[in-house]
Length: 138
Image (cartoon, rainbow, N blue to C red; front, side, top):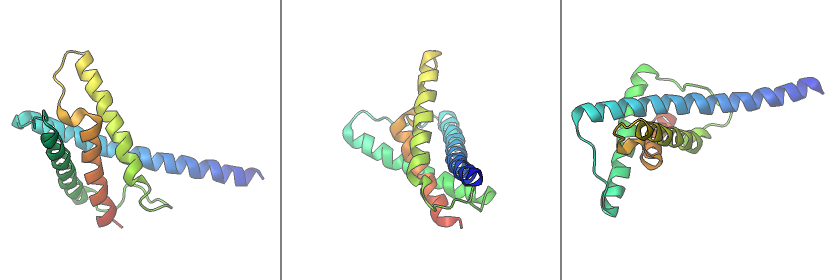
């Protein structure tokens, strides 16, 4: 009975570890994208509904670019999951939450926050990245 319970707990920890590692990787790539956009001085303005949709698509495309570039460094999946593709939605959600947390930290310390540091655009970036890594790594 104890070995069976141990396997269940180990499986749950492995699953959570996979999601966390992927979310942290996507977050770090998003932070790098944020830094590059700050240096380039090309932050999209999202004042109208159309521009918000365009920005969402743009950040998703930026995520696919970073996902493709990440394949040059990590050509294989970061973690091998028993349930292939499960992190496609979960890790972008976690990444979006971490990006919005970063935004609140920036604002709290009187720093200028950027659009990628919102849940919506952090999620779009991470989703684009996760899609590329899911379909191009095996």
